[in-house]
Structures are given as structure tokens and as C-alpha cells.
Image (cartoon, rainbow, N blue to C red; front, side):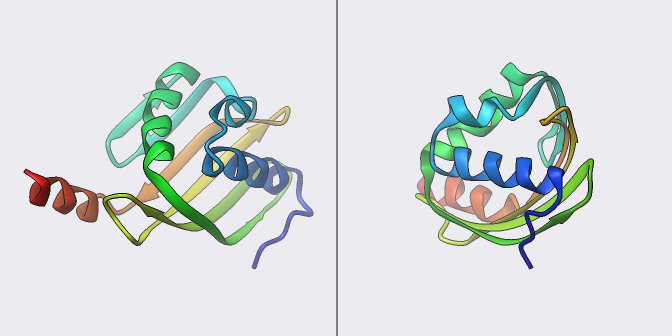
Length: 123
């Protein structure tokens, strides 16, 4: 189910299309300066740190497709599938909070194990 009839989902989808299209400048227009992101690697605070976290991933991305998106006025949950240079199947999900059209919080989930295995086999 993909629904863009809520304000938060519209922002989350625009953000997804920007970073998955490797347009980090546009993607960051949807991110609050004081974003707080909880990811498998730990807490990331601030737009600069968040960009430093996401941009390397966007550079190894080979494709991305949205699987589901739904939400309300302030929150959106999106789940997508990605393919990257080292890992062919890398699904992810984000629960984002939106304030004034920008993402202020993100709970970012993905399985790190395939990426760790790819790094180990490259060594």
C-alpha cells in the first residue's frame, strides 16, 4: 500500500525519491537541521551528521523501489527495497516525524548482516 494523501507521507516519498535518485542536495531540503535519527549504528544528530551517514549509501545504490508508505499528519512509515553494489537485496524501513514539511526524527531500520558479510568477503 502506497498512499500519498497524508502530508507526512508526501514529504517522506519526496525525500525517498530524492536520495534514491542520488540528489542529496534535494533530499536534505526535507531534513531538519536538528534531525535525530536512530539507526542500527546508533544515534545520529544534526543534518550534517545525517548527510554523512546517508550519502555514502546513496552512492553505492543501484536501484530502489518503494514497497509501502502510509501515515498521518505528522508521521509516515515507509518500507522500500534497495540493491547496492555489494548487496543485491537490502530492504529498509523508516518511521519519520515531520514538522513544517521537514523530517525531525527518523527511526531507520535495515539488516546490517549482509553488508558486514560483503565487507568480510572483500577482505
